[in-house]
Image (cartoon, rainbow, N blue to C red; front, top):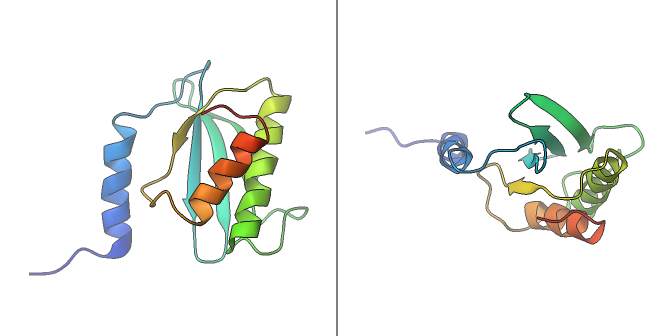
Length: 118
């Protein structure tokens, strides 16, 4: 019997999380995606289907080490600042099927310190 791959398991967990977590206009969803070399964060209004704010380690001013905890902290601060500039202070956190550990936790903690309320 074939075993499920790591990404297939993560996708299944993410779908289970998304059944409960949805972003509204008052409280959008802070979604995280991480790859081996980069990390991405978006603030999404699921009712409208719009991304309200985003930050990624592939951006020119945030480029550098997105594959480590320091890079994740910079992305968390950047997405929180961009969300606050748009008047968003409260979000729901979507860890994207990843464990709340390491880079995902660092991004969330940095966003909290920068003023977002989870």
